[in-house]
Figure 1 (cartoon, helix red, strand yellow):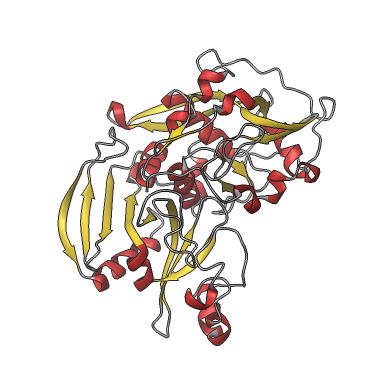
Figure 2 (cartoon, rainbow, N blue to C red):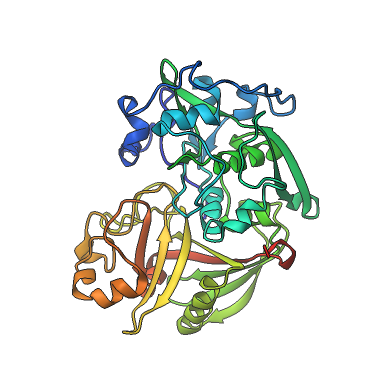
Length: 396
């Protein structure tokens, strides 16, 4: 589940080695004409206190490299701006802390932290989990733009950390008074994901420190998870179960022990049970490495972390998983629906309206969400992880 960044944060060119134009997936973020001006007299700046530990400078952004590719230093083109002004730019909205948390609230920005964005998206299925990351906050914006975020530190015995931050985030400037987030990008007016990302960046030392990781590690930082199980899909079609230990210090190569081979039917039953349990969180990655798609017609991004939101056996016997790409786009079978069963534009939905009704499929939508059959998930999948929320962190 090693992370891949989504797109450049113009005007500083973040990715020169990707042949595709990443911004095509986020037209509102690319087209400055679609943005509003957050004039200084439109949103009054709160009397906030500068953060001496995590100042608004190049060091807090850091130098960003992923998988051997060098990126321009985002901070050289970034201006730190209040999240309230950013929301005004995104859609002319008044900012909110949260109002309707969902898996589609956020998309990954120009940094390779899909592992953390995917973890947040998975937890958004149960909003109480993420709301508990803001102790004492009932969903209200702070008048002084100051917030406390609760995280857990696996490098210090899973100690609970309360990280104090203000709401200023790195942005690129598209024009006079027009700001765009350099990193995580809201799809609405909620700022909680921007704050979670900033709090973890502060705890780890910089935004660059968020590059590369595994989604189960995101759940560890957010909820103090110490129990994780990984199902690895081998080239010979077998499935090996691994138990990941609580030692999360080595982010790119976690400590794990094999627990034997698992029959696909047994693995499916376990996954289906886990996906319906509010206190387990599921994530996946696809075979391969790099930012290329596994095959031209799949739309699946190799080595990239996804959230698994549902696992359903329909009454007609179809075993389907719903996944989400944290980019908020680039879905399974978008370009070739005929060869990608149950993708958004697959003819199977029209042929089997009972299945569509049973799983809640309401039609194509380029939001990063898609359905994929279990057998092809195994064929293209690299691994699937299941993380367990500690009892003491489960909301009442």
